[in-house]
Amino acid sequence: MFQQNNIRKDGNSSVVPGLCQLFTVPKLATGNSVQLDRSLTGYLKCNLAVPWNLYAKKWVKRFYYKYLGRKGEAPFQAAAKVFAPALPFQKGDRVRVRSVGDINSTLDPFSELKGCAFLPVMHQYCDTEQRIFKVMKRFVDERDYRPKKTKGIILLENIVCDGTPLYGECDRCCFLFWREEWLEKI
Image (tube, rainbow, N blue to C red):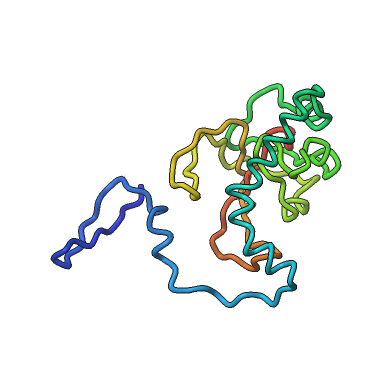
């Protein structure tokens, strides 16, 4: 378990056991890194990402799914049911990441399946064999620092994000989230 240093008013620090280091992440930054040269489109994407993801996307998705609810099951939902695993995955299992075509057939128009985004950087791992690092049950959402329950999310060994084309390189090495429908046991 991580420990957090607290600076008291008298200048001494104390360690509070049991707290997560995640809450200190905003304080770790010493400034902004050098931005990549971007086009106007890239600049707008970066500056509108937070309002889009926190506010607008939620309402667009609600409207979209409400409209779909009147029309019955969407094709991507049917495809996801076909790929649902018969047996639960466990740590250490060998799996094959499905092909890009199979995964794309399970994605909604927002490139997500049950809220989990399939990122362009994940394409390179399609049709490869991997080992399961962990089956997730909980995680801390960094947007609001609250623990969230999850089901059907898998972490694969040594598959981490190293940045995005839009924001550039990142040294944090966050695990990429994989839906169980995108994997098959070997």
